[in-house]
Image (tube, rainbow, N blue to C red):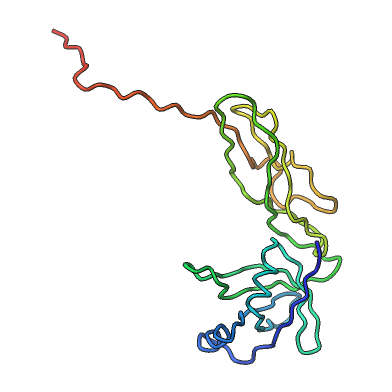
Length: 194
């Protein structure tokens, strides 16, 4: 995964009022946690951060006041209706360090013929990977699966350097038969016993 460089400003004022001022200046307030250091409060240009966050688990290099820090987004808060960024929590990482991330699951192939439906029990797969080599997604083949078949976490081919961060028996996907709608029963169709 490519590294994205963003400029950040260290924030010295905190609270709701300060956060609102940052947002009016088109900046997103954020906090960097990790490595036992005191949290660092930063502000990042809204559009640049929004573009960087289009990639899940983006590896971001924040440049601030002559300091450079490698981070990944851990929690992103968006405004409910318009969807603009409100606040971001980052996790500081180092090259070679392992992190646990949620990687999107993509499927490929066609199910077996018939009226079958593919049910996603999990949309993301928790993996442990090196911070600088986080996979963007994992792909699972569902070709030929029939009703009653399922895909477990152990069935997924993991990118090199990644390990599962969940039980390998966890069901990710399952194939179910489509339910036919039952015919409506006519009222008063009861037979009278006499």
